[in-house]
Length: 108
Image (cartoon, rainbow, N blue to C red; front, side):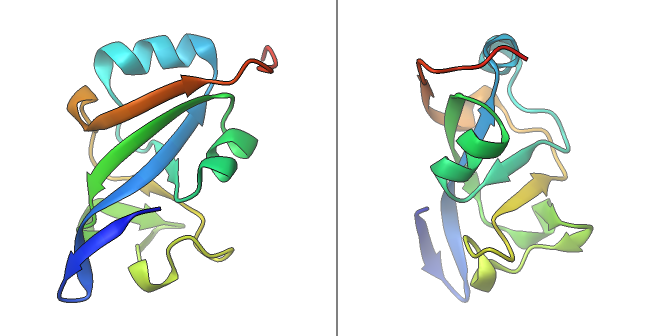
């Protein structure tokens, strides 16, 4: 996870979204829908989402993201207490900074 910036909030954060091959094709064309979950660690995105992993750079403005119906607390980002969050807004394809497909994907 990369977070950089000032004032207790950083300007951007690098996060990950794991999914299956079929959903990955849609994401590449349309981006991520409101309510999509992201993980702070790539390993978590693979473990809980799937072997097709997107690297995404987002604003870290806490009003845009939620964890268990609470605003995100970046001081806990990447901990066991705060390993994932979901979006309150759609995320466009322009925020996708990378994509990889692991060869050991399991069909769902």
